[in-house]
Amino acid sequence: MIRSLRPFLLGLLTALTISAVFGQTDQPGSKDYPGISRMPSFSISSYKYLQFDSFSFTVSENGKERKQPFPQCPPVKNAACATSGV
Image 1 (tube, rainbow, N blue to C red):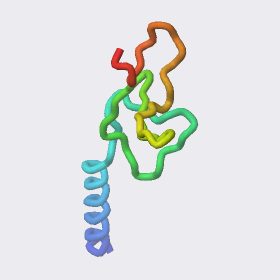
Image 2: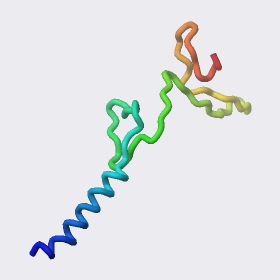
Image 3: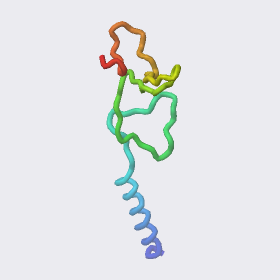
């Protein structure tokens, strides 16, 4: 009976070792955004923390194209803003 369990135990040991070696871990210091759950089997491999960031979209207005930052810079005097280059 023990001989018939050897292949099973060896396979189980191999599977546990492989999962421990190749297990995904998050980058130190990273964390999920509050209130948003992570998808199964996903990990944080890299991240960049920004206090405030925006993205500029190209918009057309009266036949003219221009860049429109979204979201707008915070209405705080002397506040650093990603779109103003300050």
